[in-house]
Length: 290
Image 1 (tube, rainbow, N blue to C red):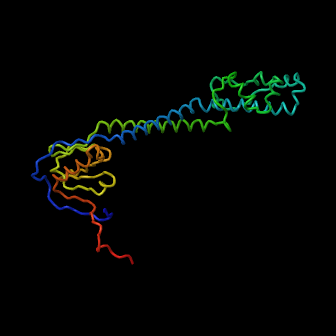
Image 2: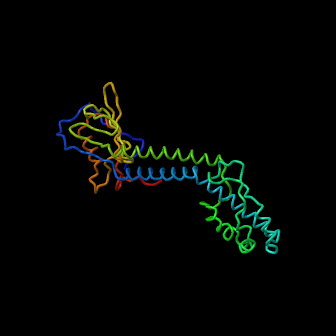
């Protein structure tokens, strides 16, 4: 089994052995990574659209509906308290003199809304009001939505300018994240992890002859499919070998990443850092429990 904290170092010099080079091994981006990047792109894009729509029109439309609903709610309360059903003429006179109460900040309303606005004509109809007292939101407000061009149902409260501005901020953040996911997706699709003719081509690094590598760290290879290699000489570059993103380890697909690593190790004579593999004691060698 693999034990953490223990490492084995294979001593040796730089360069390749005299083994013949195998055919090129090319590891393309794995489907799981591409699908994950695509999912992230779609998620951030959807969120960006939702936030930006709410910032541009959505919250303003909800505010419009909210203030109309508050007018309907007040009309219902006034109708009950004034016994409007008993004197339809008096109720009509009262209702036609009322206005929808909008806030002073007109920026939180749709551009088409131009206060002051009187109560809708239907609210002056005593018969209509009497029939809707059982459920004002459904029987009084809902019929007014088409008449007034209301596009959203009212919320529990209105949205002030700060809340609307927040939608723009969140929309901008999600847009940047969506662009980042798109960049990673396109960049990863065009990259390859390749070993051919004694040269290792790792994504993000220039082609490097294996003879220039002097150290190979495999401690994360078994668990995360991740390894690192270093070059000698003055530059001392570090190469990232991501087998989980490029190639993969599925047996039915030939485990390209594992084949590349085995070919790399077969031609590598530098220092290898890896966890020690210890065999489980068997039979009589199993220690007795205290």
